Image (cartoon, rainbow, N blue to C red):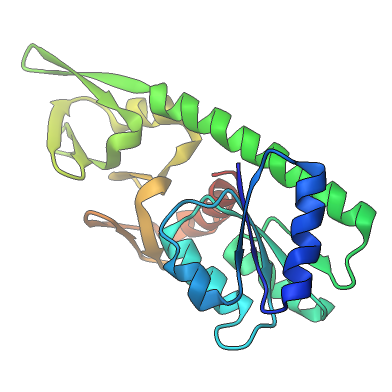
Length: 234
């Protein structure tokens, strides 16, 4: 488990680091003194304590950029000004701590963050193991769900789009939707997308790592709700 602490005040970094080490002595702890330094890190972070008020790129700006690279990191904001916390959930923050940090509150929030991380790993393992068998002209192919960017229905055929491949077969998109589970969403009667590959979206269009799909207007509120839940889960 890798826990990062990003704060431009050394004493706060050390203070949080000591608390983390005391509660989870086996955790790998890394420190960053700025948002810019954090964004240069190229390895996954499991849990991040992120100060909102920092010189240079502040915590909110840092979190928005970090989310583009890593949707799974569990972010706990640290701030001296409580008004900022209302913005925290725009970037899928898990929780927040107000300075000066209360010992009991810190221990509780960190414990819950670690439990969330454990759930993420369980869900990730289950998702990675799930697959569908596709029958195309008598040829049966195993397709891992995590590799599906999106699927669409066209002329009674379902076309599965992966990053480097496409597979089509006769079938119903609704059947694939049932098997795919809550990591996928039916944005439109013709499209089923994998939340994992969403790069950006608006009320009419979803932009994926490969391709774009339509968003039915009536489905947009539910999409936003489930996508935020997916990011908080993972």
